[in-house]
Length: 368
Ligand code: ATP
Picture 1: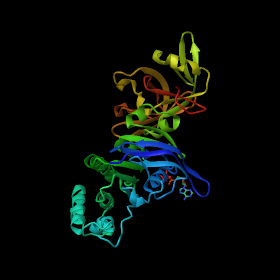
Picture 2 (picture 1 turned 90 degrees about the vertical axis):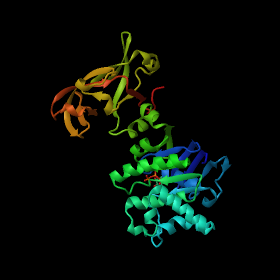
Picture 3 (picture 1 turned 90 degrees about the horizontal axis):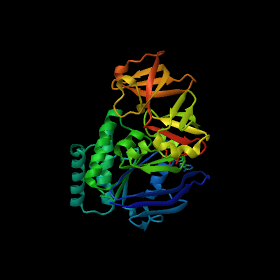
Picture 4 (picture 1 turned 45 degrees about the vertical axis):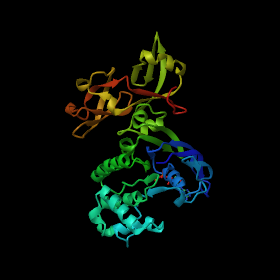
């Protein structure tokens, strides 16, 4: 178990490109922290700096209170699982898993016992004599994890370890890694660009964009209370709908005016939004917070909106409906599959007014 801290860590590559800027992140012992963000946002660079495979340009990295910036990778007591798995093709599974222990000079009996224990834990004990090329993708992935487990590290760093698996296997491997984390009780830091992996596995998620940490929180809090437009749009699929909007007073009420959408601000939020009257804003509503009136669940604070259906994607358990407002703006709704909407139909949907988000258009931050 390791307590890991990034303090003002920046990485500027030799060509001047800043891949990670002022990263501050405190990762608790035995936490499963997922670093998520689009391709090129600096996730791998952050992980490699922690592993010691990349120097940081400034800032401090601490493992269990000790600054490790100058420590070599082997002295950091962490194991990394790569996207490519990086198994040695000429070695058997056993030899691949035993290799790091042999380098450390561990006694033969202990190596045997540790490899066997890790293999049993991962259900690959029958594969120990095989070469990597004789394994399926899922089995290779387990060997890569097994190779990390035998070292009994204080933390596991994983860089997109499931991206080579097919969709079904990925779901299974996700659950296996979560179970493994609980069993080992060790710190996991896991890099992915897949927000579903992040939501399903992370005890906390750190969202990055363009080298900058955007928000760190539990999956539910990130989803419910995104700090900014980027996090709101990145977490959740299909993505949150956004509309240009402005707050307008009317008699004693406050309204969100978003073109063809006109929404009253619930009374509890009025004093919070009052100072932003007239400022350009962005209104966000998730597709799952829009309902067919026939199937709206209890507890929804409904606002009826007229729209035209342009496309319907039937998913079996839901319909993804592409809708157009009279002013031409488009949005998506995840609707009850019994709706059977058809393209071209004029329909009414309900927006749940308990579940909208308002952001400042200039800063893209959520309204304070
Ligand atoms: P991906 O999901 O595609 O792996 P990532 O978030 O892990 O992306 P990084 O690999 O950390 O991204 O790269 C961050 C940025 O730094 C990218 O724009 C990349 O092109 C750049 N970068 C990476 N390595 C170098 C290097 N050696 N020199 C210059 N720029 C680099």
